[in-house]
Length: 446
Image 1 (tube, rainbow, N blue to C red):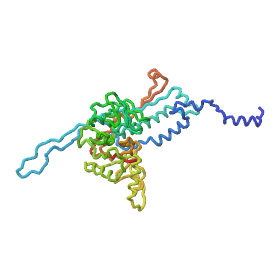
Image 2: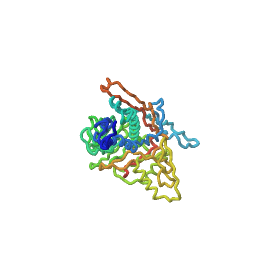
Image 3: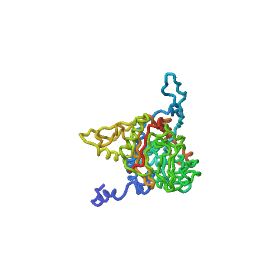
Image 4: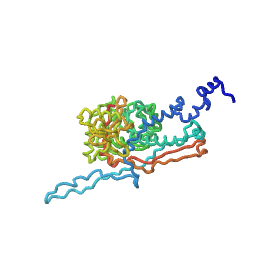
C-alpha cells in the first residue's frame, strides 16, 4: 500500500475535528438523564454533581440520636405533682390532703418516607455502551439514596405555620422558598382573619404543592384568603422540630388591618394549651424582623435550665451562624487561637477557636448550621432569616420502626412499560419525650 500524500494525511488527521465516528446523535443518546432538554449531557451530569455537593447536607438528621422503635405506640407523661400533697405539718396538725399525679398519654406512630426511581430497558442497555455512564440503575440508586435522606432532613426541619400571601378557594400562596414545608397529605387548618380570628373547625389535607410558585392546594372544605394563617397540625411525613418546639397562642405574621392576630393553636394537633406540652421558650416578634442578640439565646438557655433540662445542641441557618460570629467577635480579647471541633451524633461542628473567632460552641453548647433550617416570614410576606433552635437532645430521638428498605421491580406487564423501577422507603418518626426543655427563636433578620 502506497504512503498517503500530504494532503490525504492532513485530511484524515483532521477528520475527527469536524465529524464524529459515533454519528450526529452521540451527545443526545443519554437524554434520559437530562433534567432540562435544553441543557447538554455535560452540564446535566457534572452540574448535578456540584449541586449535590452544595445542597445535600443532612446535618440535623445526623445529629439526632436514632433508636430502635421498640414495643410501644406511645408513653405516659406525669404533668403535675398533685395539689397540696406536700407541706409542713405542725405537731398536732392534720396531714396533707391526699392527691394523685396527673398522667397524660402521648401517642406516637411511625411515618413512612419513600423515594422512587426508574430507567427504561433501552437506557439501561445504551448507558453501558462507549460514552455512556455505565450502570444507570446503580447511578440512579445512589442519587435516590442521597435524595431520600435529604427528604427526611427537610421534613425534620419543616416550618409549621405561615401566612397566606394570597388565597383563592381551596388554594393559598406562600413565598416559594417556604412551600417545601408543606407536603402532600399534611393536614392543614386555618386561622381565618375575617371571622373574628377564630380557627376553622375543619381541617383540609394538602393535595398538591408547587414549589416554584408557592401555591399549596388543599381539599375542599376550607376557603383561604389573603392574610389567613395556614398551620400544619398533622404531618403525613416525619414530625418536624418546629412542630415540637411550639406553644399555644404564639403569633405568626403579626396583626392584620382588622386587628386580629394570627395565632397558632396547639389543640389542633392534640396538644391542649398547658405547661408540660409547650416549649420552654418560643421567642417570636409578631412578623417583624429583628437583629439577633445574645440575650435571646441566653434566655432560651435559661428557660430550658429552669425547666430541668440542659441544652445539648443549637441548630440554626448559615445566616444566623455568621450573625452570632459577629456578635461574639465584638466582645473577644484574643490571646492566641486554638482550633477545635465538637462531635454531635455522627456530625461535627465547623472548626472553631476557643476565642470565638470561628464559632463551634456557645456556652459550651455545640452549634450546627443546617441549610434546611426553616425561616420566618414577615407580615408583609417577605422571607426573613432562619430560626434558631436550642435543644436538649437527651429527650429527642429518631425512632426507626423499619430501616431503609430497597425494593426493585422488573414486572413489565404490571408497569405496562419496559422500565425497571426502584423504591426506597423508611418507617420512622421523631419523638420528643420532654417538650418543656426545647426552645425556639424566630422572626430574625438574615
